[in-house]
Image (cartoon, rainbow, N blue to C red; front, side, top):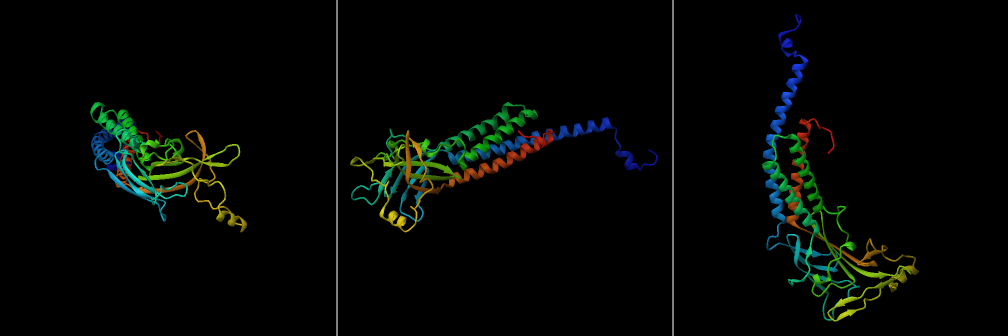
Amino acid sequence: MAGLTGRERFTIIAQPDLIEQEESTLARELAWILSSLQDTLQSLKAGLEECAALLAPSEPGSTLVLSSLRSENLKGFITRVGTRIVKGDIQLRLPSVPVPRGQPSYKLSISTQPTAPTLAFEQLTTTRTLINACLDVVDATRWTGDATNADFISGQIRLLHENIQEAKAALKGWTPSQKLWYDDPVDPAAFTPALPANVSFHLCISEAAVLLHVRTLEATNSNTGTSTPLPVTTAAGLVPAPSYSGFSIRDRLAGVLGGGKQIVHDEAHEVFVYKGQEVRVKEKVRVESQDPSLMAAMAKLGALERNVALARRALDVVMGRDGEEG
């Protein structure tokens, strides 16, 4: 020790004392983080409550304009209140949907009868359920658990993070649990008059926007590969749909001139099982409408997700779990 300066002599600590001091320092850091997480949880709760308010069934709801791009195939509007569509009128101009005599288009109206089936967004129901679960996790963490128990707090933060991620994913859309259009047909009685048998009406959420697909269908003979148009329900009753299984004059000319038949949508050559019957999609219209409330909710969930991820990472580091998964 004789050759060391005063500063060097001061910094030399016995190994047992060094370990004890490191453990004491980590304990203080852990206590500080656990204490600060209580403020973080309070802030997260406020943000989650804002998200819940954006998705709540508040009148008058959100009225969204629906209009097909560069065509008159589909025009109209729907009104969303919470998870449900409570009102809507849509005008269709598709060759495979006969237009009533004297009318410029085929009108689809959401039924407002009290006994009519409800049109609802399952994704929004999932999102609201997950947000409510997040609020329960926050309350349980703050008021019923041991705020000084690092393992308990870590588990709660992890659960909160996972729920927020799933809620955001539901608003983003196209999750593995999301039903596809042919697995999720709407009840025809949700419309006045009833939805035609050869028309599929499918609403979903994609990137916090409302996405509507209207498809006209024709039955497929699985033995011959030919298509038979499904009947159409009109104000005059059930009438056969026009046949579109053959080539039109334009298609025949294109074949003679060396061109192929025009493919007007991405599902033209696929076969689907819809209501227990094999069908092809004759025509398909896609319309997207931005929903400001859903966009705000997804943006807030994204910010909450980042904040929880930072809190979770900081707690893992102090607990010696840096780099561990789960």
